[in-house]
Structures are given as C-alpha cells and as structure tokens.
View (cartoon, rainbow, N blue to C red):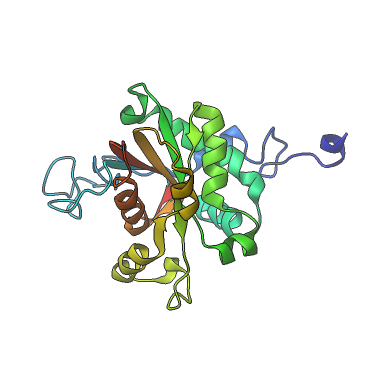
Length: 238
C-alpha cells in the first residue's frame, strides 16, 4: 500500500524503480578510467613512469595492500554522494552498495576465498549526531549483506580542537596530518578483546588523497592476527 501511495523512483532519472537507483542509471555512472595503479587504484592514463604503478605510489610507504574505487567523483556520482552524506538520503546506501558489490566481484584480492571483515571509516560523535548515521557504516552494512561478510568496528574518530572544518576542504598535507591525529583504536573494542578476521577491507564513501585510508590501515595492521588490509570506496576524487 505504501509503495502504491509513495512509489519508489530513481534519484537520477525519476522513473519508477525497485530501489532509489535504476539499473540503467547505475550503469551510466562514471567509472574510474583504466589502466589503474595496482596499489592505490588511481587512473594512470599511461603516464606513470613504471607499469601498473602511479608516480605518487612509486617508492612510497604501503600502509594498505591495495585500494579500489567503483566510481569517479564527478557528475551524478558527486551529487549522489553529497546527498547520502549531507542531505539525509540514507535510502541511497542500498543501491550504492550494489555498485560496491560489483567492484567486490571484480577485485581478485577479494575473491581468493576466506573471510574478509568490513571496517567502515568512523565519523566523530558530533557529525554522527548531525547526520543521524555514518554513511560509510551504512554502505558497509549493505555490502556485508550482499557479499556474506561481517562488519567489524575496531576504530574510532575523535574531533580535535583544531579541526574546525571538514577534512574535505583541507590540503593533501593537512589531511595527512589530521588523519594521523583523529583516528584511533576504540576503547570499547579493546575492552571486548574481540577477534578479527585476518583480512580486513576498509569501506568509505570517497577516496580523496588516501590520508584517511592510510591512517586507518596503519592502526589495523597493529592488531593481532591481521595479515592484510585493503580499501574499497564508492567514489574516487579525480
């Protein structure tokens, strides 16, 4: 009855759809161009000085084992991510997680067998209260239903006194410095002494400079039994 009174429509084309994104519009969203850096997942466009590795990753530290992003953060993708993150459009998490699941199935590292734990990037308490949810956690939970994995949350995010603006408006250097300060192992997780799968994948909405993913991966790799940490994001800043 509710579906009849309030029919579900695609958030892009406005046509009736089973979820808030129809198949045609999901397929039309811009993907990250190939070839890709095999480490961070950036589009190399054939300009890297080494095959399969972008110049930014060449010779750099490898906090995570690999990173992949499903979509390029432009056009309709940018609007959808913005709506999910800032306009309370939590209903977008389920169809967007389907796009992440397609990426999961196309990522060889995730299909070697064995269990992966999904670790959503945390938000601080103020932003969670303001938004009503953590968009990365919504994506991770919807993705877990599709791929048969479980969500684990050993991380927390603090808001430092100097952080008065979103990290999305910071320079790359400032993002790295800030990420290293605000992410930490959750006290609640330590108290539980909970076990983790040996392989973890960090789930987030956007990969910008990689500062957040690197900071989180650095912490996760210190946990007992963790052997591999990957990164899966819905979109990537181009």
